[in-house]
Length: 149
Length: 149
Length: 149
Length: 149
Image 1 (cartoon, one colour):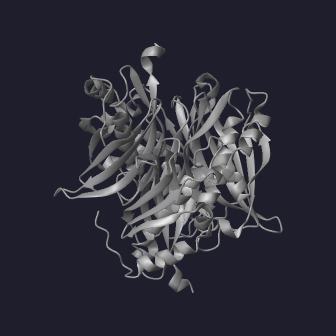
Image 2: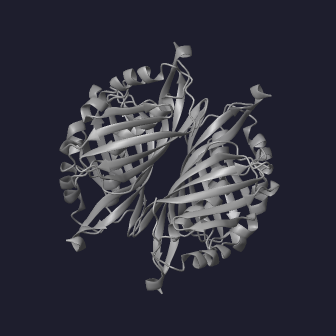
Image 3: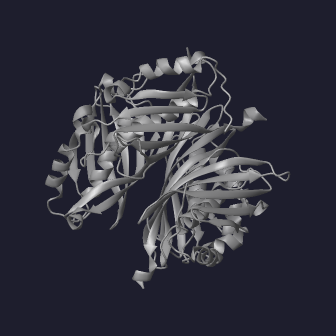
C-alpha cells in the first residue's frame, strides 16, 4: 500500500509521544520501526507480564498491538493531531510464547476522522523463529489538538 | 441470567489461578467479586499504567477486562478445566480516567467448548461516581486440562 | 439507561429511512419498536434466507442487528443527521433457528460523532420461546447531512 | 502463506455446500475462486440489496464476507467436517458502491477446532477499478459431522 504522510515531522513527534506512554516503560516495550503507515513495537518476554500458564498475558499482547496501531494511524495524520483508540478486536491464535514479541501495525484505510489499522503480533524464539500469536483489527480517531487549544 | 456452576470448587481454584497471573501483581489488580457467571476485577489508577495523555492505557483496560471475562467463563466450566481467550473486541467509550477502575464480566452464553462473555469497565472517581469507559465482548475456550495430563 | 432524544421528529424520520432500506423489503424485515436509544426489528424465518444447514444465515442475522443498531443510534442524534455503520462485531451463539427472529438494539454510549450500540438477536419458536442466537457490539457514525447539502 | 489441504475433495464438497446456501441465490452471489485457504465470492450490485442511501447494505457485505471466510476455513478442514461461524468483526471503510462486489477470504491460522480468517471486500466499478469497502476478521468452528451421524 502507498501511504503518503501529511505531517513532515511525524516521526519525531511520534517518538516523543511514545516516550510519554509510561506503560511502555513499565513493561519494557520499544519502538523498533516508524514509517508512513507502518509502526513496529518490540517487547522482551518477562515473567511478570504473564498469565496463569506463564505465557504473555493477552492484555499485554493487546497493549503493544494497540500502541502500534495508534501510532501507525498517527503517521498519516495532519500536523497538530492526536490519536485515540476507538475500538479493536484481537484474535489470540496461539499461546503467546517467545523470547520477545513484535507487534507490526499497518494502516488499511486512512480517513479524515477515522483510520482502520491491522496489526500482527509475533512471538520470536531465541533462534529467531517467528510465529504469529495474535491479529488485531481496529479503528483510531484523529483528534484535532491544535484547534482544541 | 441464571448461571449454574458445574465445579463446586470453582471459587477457590479461580483465586489460586488469579494469584498465578503475575501481570495482575505488576499492575496492582485485585479480584473483588467471584460468583457463578460473574467476575469483577479492580485496579487503582497509577501513573505508570498510562498512555501519552495520562489516561489508563487501553491495553491495561483490556488486561483487566480480559482476565475478568476469562474467569467469569471459568466459574461455569466443569472440574479440571483451564480457560484461554479466543478473541475479544473492546470499544473505548471515554478517556479512561478515575481513581480506580472496575471490570465487571458476565457470561452471555456458556458452551461446552466456547463461552461468550461481556464486560463493562468503569472509571470510579474519588467521590464514588462511576462512568463506563469501555465495553468488551469476547469468546473464551474451555481447555480440558485433566485429560491432557 | 436514560436516553434523551435531541430530535423531536426522530421516530417519523426513522420510519421513513427504514422504508428506504430496500434490503429490508427483500428479506421481509419489519420495524417493531422505536424508542429513544432502543430499536427492535423482526424477521420471519424463510427458507430462502438460509445457509447450508437450513438455519438463518449469519449475514442476515447481522443485517437486522446492524439496522437495529444504526437506528438505535439515530434516535439520539440531532435533527439533520444521517447514520453510517463504522464497524460491528457479532458472536453467533447458537444455530439461528426459530419461526421468527427479533433484533433488539440499545445505545451504550451516545457521542457527538460516534455512538456505541449493543444488540441481541433472539430466535423465537412457534410457542413463543425466545433463545439468544447472536450478540452484536458496534460503532455508528453521525453524519451531518444538513450541513453537507 | 502455505496452506495444505487435508481433504482431497474439498473443492467439490465446498461447491455442493455453497449451492445449498439459499441466501446466495436470493442475493445473486457466486463462488468465483476456491483454493486451499482462499475463497472468493462475487456479487453484482442490485437496488434491492441496498440501505437507505442506495449503497449495498453492510449486512449483505457481511453475508458474502462471512460465507467466503467460512469456506476458506473449510478448504483446510479434514474430510467429514462442517463449518460454523463463531464470530466476526467487520470494519466498513467506505460506502459500498460498485457495479459488483468481491469478497476475498484467506485463512490466517488453521486449527483443529478453530480457524481464524480475514476477508477484504472490494467494490468494483464498471471500468474495473477496485476499492476496498470492508475488512473482516473472524473465527470459524470445525464441526465433526462424520462422527456426529
